[in-house]
Image 1: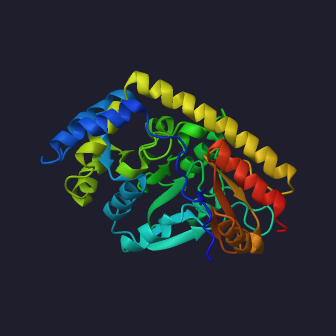
Image 2: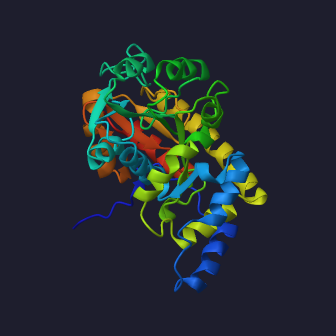
Length: 342
């Protein structure tokens, strides 16, 4: 007889918290107009974001999450063939680059910051700057980095940007920005204002808890926005995504979301401490997930966790990424580690 094992999914970097009541209400109200097309310009959401960020509306691009917008940017920045990116980062970057007909130029992570394998946890910005040539279409940076949770500090980013030619766009992906507590991690919008080639990616999927609606935004130099808009799909984001994202920007909602982020940061600290107490190496994280640099033990760990009903993401030969979940989910993970012989 097959025994059903209840699954706890800690593999997708989703928030463990349900949608706020005010956002559920926005979805319910939007259901009454499902027969109507969405605003193809996302005018209200664009205006609200421009006001919030104090940039011209021409600098805002709204689209299907930060990953979808990253695809649009990489496609629009052609025709140069190469895209420089960190080698242990968001697993979607190589696919995005291939889909754009470009060549990936992966740069290994900074040495000396981690344990086996030899790659470290964070971007090697000097090596990434050295990889930029006259063939470089753009550079992708993930801060905090997915899957390792590492962050780049203000001084090292400024030094890097000073080395990159002004005609090479630098895309800073801040999908996990709202979970950062390190004061030396800059808001990429400050870099956007200081450098004419910086683009910023953000999403409503993570801290806002709207992963199912697929909505995010990019802030780009206004001169590069028109070709990106030509790449974007028509009628994205959908009407529900636009209305709920707009509601998310209102003061009462953002205050509650800020409190939720603080709660998750406390859970991250507790889970990190408990896993280290159980003998695991856990990389410092400023995101809503943890990185276990398990090397060749990564896949066996993930398979054993799956058999115990816990889903995590394994990168073969490198490590395991574990999303910070609810208290119950985190307790279940720790119990699995405690009882296993891995």
